[in-house]
Length: 289
Ligand code: MN
Image (cartoon, rainbow, N blue to C red; front, side, top):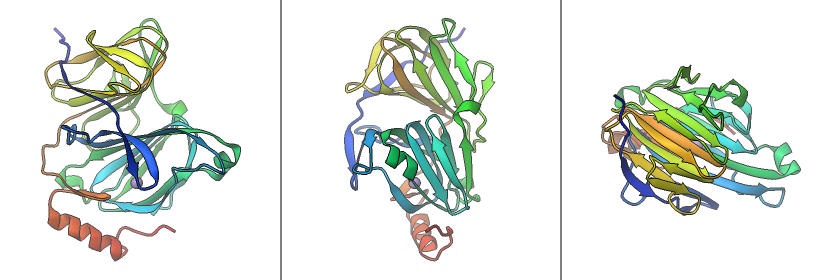
């Protein structure tokens, strides 16, 4: 018989400053270094973007040793990278970058979007790579919103989009390097849904907006508890919508390796971090202007 996972941690989503950018960072947070294999979760916006207010525009910068992923919920961004990709990213689209041995990318609201004005909101997620894959060639996958498989609850009041991994009879289109599930969930004002998560996975639910009851026990609510992590002890979690809500559900087989992180690099040792800095300076991660 399937059993419910128990709740491990409940945390908020504190505002932090990343240079001039103000965003929410539920992970890492006090007491939670990572939810292995997920290292970092940034929730940016909603910002009211206009020609006079454009706070989230990231110029060219490198990465090595993990997978930086962007889930855009509102607005429109332009992605550019050293592999030669230049893509317009629309609300609901997903950008899945496998930095591997090195990539340089840039992203920010598109010029047209800034001129038009509107809300920008997204999630940036850092998914670790195991030692054996940290130096693989870089890769970029762009998933369009309309191509993402959707699973609905019985009442059809909750939509779960399978970006990566699997749920019910649907499989995500992203080619993953490790065993992970990445789902986004939109609820109406009521309804229940059971979400299957393998027992061996570390897992979490993050709430971007709204209010839901989790496992008939804990409330996720904007401005209060926004992230719940689970123990590796059951096969599913359950959500009950209390308002129109937007959620991110993440789970993955833990990598269980030492993490050495500095700036935009995530390796296993300090020596590998020094090598990454040197390789970037020598142009070995490519070029982007
Ligand atoms: Mn980046």
